[in-house]
Amino acid sequence: MNKIYLVSAPQNIINAVKILSEYFPDCFSKVSKDAVSLTVTDQNSETCLMSWSQNQANIANGTITKQLRAIGELIAGNIPKNTNNYKVDSHFSTIGIMLDASRNGVMKPSEFKRWICALSLLGMNQIMLYTEDTYEIKGQDRFGYLRGRYTENELRDLDKFAKTFELEIVGCIQTLGHLEQIARWDDYKNLFDLGSTLLVGNEDTYKLIENMISSIKNSLSSSRIHIGMDEAWQLGRGKHLDLHGHRSHFDLFNEHLTKVTAICEKNGLQPMIWSDMFFTTASPTHTFYDVNAVFPDDVLSKIPKQTQLVYWDYYHNDKETYLRYIKRHREINHEPIMASGVWTWGQLWYNRKITEANVTACLDACIESGVKELFFTMWGDDGAYCDYDSSIAGLTFAAEKAYHTQTDDNNAANIFKIFTNGHDYYSDNIKLSDTLCENEFQPSVLLWDDLLLGIFMNEVKDENISILNGIKSRLKDTIRELNGKKYETTTGGDFECALSTAKLLLRKINLREKLVLAYDNKDTDMLQMVAFEALMAADLADTTENLWRRSWMRRNKPEGYEILQIRLAGISKRLREAAQRIEEFLNGEAENIPELENRPTKKQSNYYLWNQVASGSINI
Image (cartoon, one colour):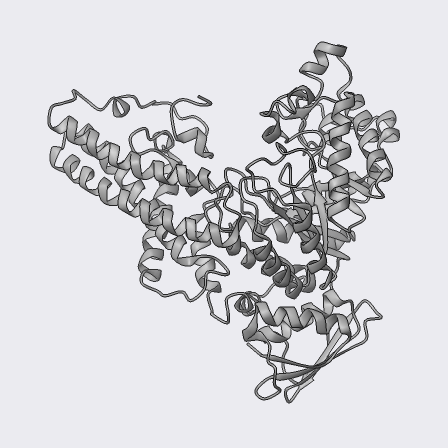
């Protein structure tokens, strides 16, 4: 890794490097000795060129985004010495991320700024901030109540900070569906059609949306806004149906979109929406990825031309699917913005295998078809328990692909060192990803699965047994390899926390298997051992919770952690409960253990979420 000494540069680069040196001090020097002396000139063309030899480097031309990317590559050591006119250029005009601040975790402004710095060195120039209700609306104290919402002042400060790097923060909100968090409060109950979907055509609904959009306008300087409108399947099927009778799903959607678009325009904002509602409406099976979807001419004519469509697809690993749907968006006269994904949702650690396979296929299609705007979603479904910092490895990979088409693990590992204070933790990040993530079913569900109830483990039959055995084998190998290793930073992923989670996960899997075997065989000695080991596992759960708390409080506002604390404390308490129940059974105080007497023989679909396996009851 090289240290940079900035000799001269345009003022915007000087300002950016000054801030970067505060966040990544090991990458920059205040003296020229033992550092690469860097001169930056001009910013009047698209392509950035770098030359360097004998510890003297020059960056010429390119946008500030590309010049900062070039600085990142120079620090990482990915540009060979004695290189002339090394090209730093991207296939995209916009490369960004969507940061999910709605699924439990709201990143602290101080941590947000560190991420802005990291993204700038990766060569990214946009953050879409996904806030369903986690932003302030003046005079509405129940909007984002106890959810860690961003204040207008916090967003203005972040916006100003991001501008130093010419990085655009785009407000991404919801103006139709996905608003269940406010539907619980009396202030908003009359604004809902059914479930989490707003009541369209209602005057008070549009007053709320006016306030939403006005708040974003007052908080962020971007001229763009993402107004959501995805997955609103319940539109027109609840209160609206009672009041107005049945109406065309598309007509209701389009009338609402037209009204919200007008509100955006009144505020000087260009809206974009997720495109799935148009495709599902046109599909005979009402599914997004339906090749048989046909758009009637009257439908096409009513789609507002000024509204951009975002094609989201994180699920395919074949280039042809992306090419097909990019073409379909263009057939309805809209140039798509592409939303790929760095997989953080439902994962204990960023999922490398799915991310790399799907991002590669997606970007290959985008490059081939000439799509110019791209961002990577980082959702937090099921409680935002994924270690977000682990995903910086995925973003490093994605940025490599966006800038160089071909990816190089060595280059990605070198850039990753920037974010871990020079430590070579990239291979450990990858190992933890391959250990804590499984594409067939998510190991996180094994963590949430109750030892006595075993709702998920009861479904592990047939082919899933080999998958489970593979997970156990990888857990053992990783724990053996990483155990006792000292990590000097929690950036790039909290490795100590992940290792403790891996130990707890392996212990819980083994305990369930031993418990069932011992109970079925009436092996009292083994049952006694399970009871003892359950108490030891409970202590490990307590230790793991403390590490999760450290990781969370460093990265996020405190609101939301109560969800994970309840879950992890629940694991500990339920392990102790299992030990007590076993002792009561062995002592003759109970005839049996009822939960172990009730196991289905027929397999059903796997479960993935905490609330699907924490109890036999739901929504109590």
